[in-house]
Structures are given as C-alpha cells and as structure tokens.
Length: 138
Image (tube, rainbow, N blue to C red; front, side, top):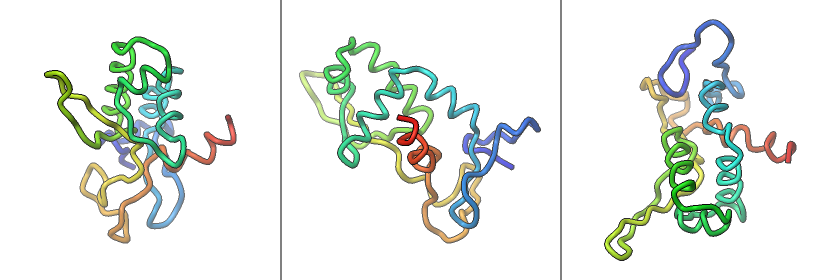
C-alpha cells in the first residue's frame, strides 16, 4: 500500500488506511507522528483549528503562543512541509512577505501517486480523519 508521501509500506505496518470505501486513504503514521512530535506544532494545529478553522500568519501564532517568531516560523514550515497546513495567501508588509496558513482539510482528488480516491472527490487528509480522536484525547 502506498503512503501519502509516496513511500511504500516497509512491512512493519507503518502505513495503514484510515476508513474504508472510497473515502479511505493510506496514512504514513511514522511521517505523521514526526510532523506532530513537537508540542509547539500540536499547539499551532490546535490554534488553527479553533472557531471552525482560522487563517493566521506565523506572526499571529507567535503572539498567541508567546514564543519568538523564529521558533514559530520553523514549526510552521515543518507543518507545511508535512501537508498538515496550507498556505492561503500572502501580503507585503514593510518589504517582507507575510504568509497566512490554515489547517489542511482536503487532499487532492488523487493521492500522491495519481490514484483517484474512487468517487472523484477529495479524500480526507490524515489530520481531518484523526480530528475526532484528537478531541477525545484533549
């Protein structure tokens, strides 16, 4: 079974599908665990998920978390590389570009290997599929 990042399962059960039927998606649990291993990343995901989903810049997140902007930028970049958040828009501020992110709620209609999810609609992302379990754990 292929995982979301294009790697195939290595036989140790690291990649398993979430759900069944046309909305099921393969998940690389190791990749997902690494991306959410740091407590600040989990906090960033929680803040972006408040109020039905917020769109914020690293600067906004830095103020809410009361941590240096450089730390926030690093963790936001890691979450973006892991496809757990998505860049929504950019704006120019005093000669710099400010980026705004939101939670990734939809995967492309095909997985990373060009395989359709079965019904032509976007599949849930691993984060969206895990959201109920995350709320129960909190």
